[in-house]
Amino acid sequence: MGRPGAWAIIFAMTRPLVALAGVGAWGRHHLRNLRSMGCLGPVYDPSEEARSLIPVEHRAASFEDLLCGDGAESIVIATPARTHYRLALAALLAGKHVLVEKPLTLRVSEAEELVRLADERQRVLMVGHITLFHPALTKLRSLVQTGALGTLRYLYANRLNLGTVREEEDILWSFAPHDVAWLVCTLGQTPRRVDAVGGSYLRPGRADVTITHLEFEAGVKAHIFVSWLHPTKEHRLVVIGSDLMAVFEDGKDGGRLDLFRVDSARLERAGPAGIPDTVEFARAEPLRLELEHFLDCQRTGEEPRSGGRHGLAVLRVLAEAHQQLGRAQPALPREGDSPDHA
Image 1 (cartoon, rainbow, N blue to C red):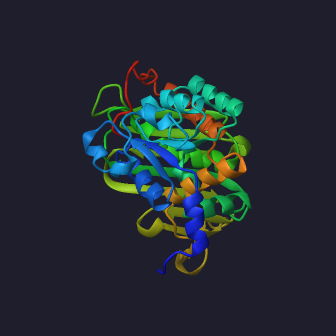
Image 2: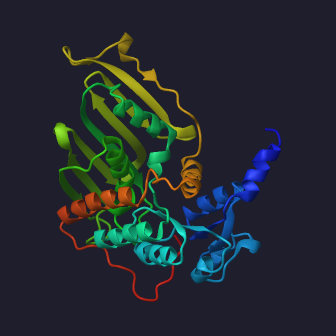
């Protein structure tokens, strides 16, 4: 690749700085992208190991330092879920635009407060639902919404792996938000019915496996199967229409999206030996696209694709599924907690 043009350099230099809270397993990807985009501001993580990843000139002494001064107009919060509400609240009160990793909060009432406050302060509030920015899933969403698959019948998502077991949340809150977010955005509605079952095998009271059934208007049904107690890694999304069936398989270089033609009368895949049509889509890092969108929304004032209201809708689905599992809500952070290593 050649050197960037003069206008690209000028644009990068004039981009508003973005502060970052949390440089854990996912936060370090935010760090890498923000740095390459030329808009990395101050960064804080209480872990000494994580701090070693932060360029010296960007290290902040505390979370409060991220909110002080005019150095950064916005902040990315990539900390454990139990800290999201408190840190996002502080950032909005400090006048910052906020991108907080999923889930937005652990309680619906907290998310409602953040959405209200962002409206009052005219700040961007965005949730890190990265599936809404994956190029293949963006293409699939377009195929569904334009009716290219025919009448929608049902959808299912599998998100399975062996570990990593999270101490601060269960599998529902860790894995399921990705697919709930995509379904709510793609169908443009929340489900009218939510049912969920699960099993706790590694730690009492915290689900390691869940299956969530969702029923939408017009009879469209979906299920989401998530597990971190599975021998192989699998991320698959299947959408069944009356004319076409779509299968997305995540993997290297953005994965693969295939379309299968359906002969409904004979209940078989049409075409030569059922060979699918592979759909082409742009190859780009979803997180980079998400961060670009965050900056664009600050500039234009538009509601983000994964804005606070969308995050609240997703949270309501998760809360209902959580209740179906028959457990109490996860505990909120204790007073005085700091943003742990994410």
